[in-house]
Length: 163
Image (cartoon, rainbow, N blue to C red; front, side, top):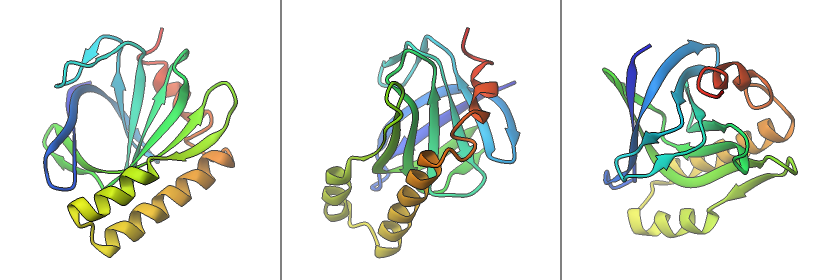
């Protein structure tokens, strides 16, 4: 298991956030990265609650699966498809997020206002807008209908970083 740097950028190329993660493995869903408690991002944020990030083989999203007691069990960022450069994975955040609330099981699409504002600010091309909306709709359906890896599959990966 090696260390992977996760870089999340905004559409203009500026840094949004970055953090180190542990390469846990790969499967049919993508590459799984562990974020143990105490991980520190480049902004100084400390991840108090462990989680795992799934970088899919293809797709306009990434997903973070959080250990309890985090309020969100699943948090998906709509992003450009990931690019890998040696031990660094890079995605561009496209603002929209799909999340599942742990206690209620409610699945929500959030940050639509930010997505709309950034379409103007950053000049998202129409294809990017369409891909982002399609990914958000796909994720809403997949998480709501308990499709894997969003239901139980991620638990085996989360066990590697959660006590």
